[in-house]
Image 1: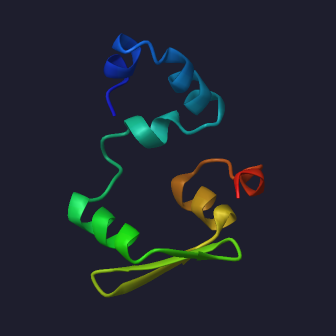
Image 2: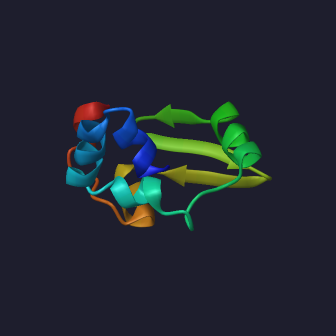
Length: 84
C-alpha cells in the first residue's frame, strides 16, 4: 500500500487508525505479503468457525485464531473479539 495515495485521497484518518492499532506497517511493508493467486485460493477456501480461521493454499492446510494471527503478523490482537 502506498501511503502517499491514501493521503492524496484525503484518507489520512484511515492511515492514523491503522497506525494507532499497530497495523500500518503490515500494510506498508513491501517485504511482507503473498501472491494474488495464493490470496484468491485462500479466500475461496476460507471458513471461520468459533473464531478459528481455516483454509488451504497449494495443498497446505492453514488454521489460526486472532491471537495466533497477531503473533504471526507481530501486531496486537487485543479487542479482536469485539469485531467478531
